[in-house]
Length: 201
Image (cartoon, rainbow, N blue to C red):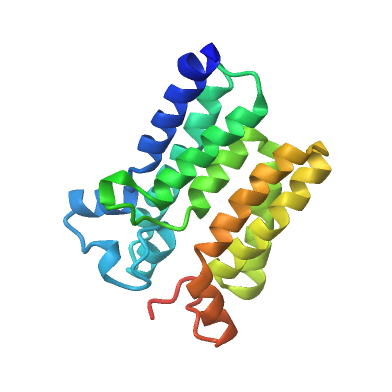
């Protein structure tokens, strides 16, 4: 029980509160730009920022969102040996992004933060997932579809990497959460209404 209080529990809290910081909202306020929740898909994330035409801000948002998933998991490896607990810490960071305490529990879809978590947990697994996203995006030009495909394959990639039920199950939970957050995009894709990457419409 001592590890729960001295290691796991504080890191869970820090991961959630750090994950709750939304870079697209913060950066937009600092630069006195329109709130990303007020235009495009109204999703406070890098893809929606890109719709505004501000590529620099979109890149900064992407990097920060990945970093806030990467950092808690990276730090956790120094304090906790069990990789399952480290995965849980990563999940808490992602939940912070999706359900941020600072923004009435209304956040982004968790894609970039999830990639940060996966890269910190297993850099090869992370690169495979990122490569899947990039290939899908190159072929179809839909950010949402790229995310859906990448996270649908994440549990399969995890199983072949570790062959462990719990590790695979935790990333399966992550995949379900991220895909569920794209439910509106799935409807738009089915109805041919989804906006392509780089489009301002």
